[in-house]
View (cartoon, rainbow, N blue to C red):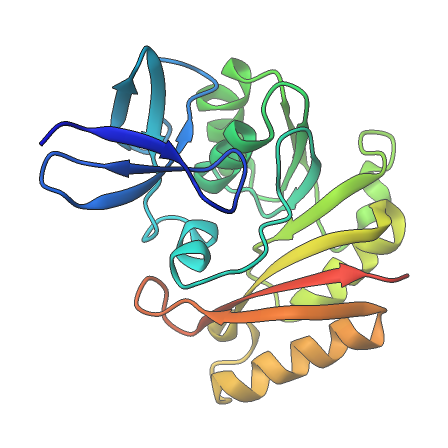
Length: 232
């Protein structure tokens, strides 16, 4: 069986790849041909290079495979990414939004931001690495304007509050957020369900209309992905 690539039936900028063994994987079109970010496999189909997208390394890919109905990150979007780390998921966001979009990558750890800059951003003109603390969003106001989407994946106790603080400054009205809630980063002594509910309640208090809550098992333990529309 030959490799086949087709556009995802619902989400622009995302692809489905059928491999030689008949299995199907998610992929994005590689904006930096020939380069890999985290050891992912490259596939060339009809003269175009794609990167296979590992759901065990990316919560966004995991959420899509778990049945996410809305992916607000689309070609041409401006995205504020909180907790970009070394760029695994952020690089796929870069692929999806393409040359007409931009992703502002906020990361607090100096080592991670160096890896993000040297291995990813220097080869992708639609990415800006920002060494900053997402808890202090005014600190990067000279670098980030209004965005269409905020994607948040941070290991902090008040994840929803931090996201809401950033949304007030940067997110367009009727823009979207995606929040990967990490229960174990909030409180290891409480049940994950209780923590998810608390964070979602914080979103609702801050003028977010929650659309979906997707559990990420088996790809990630004690995580959910929340998508919501901003009505602030």
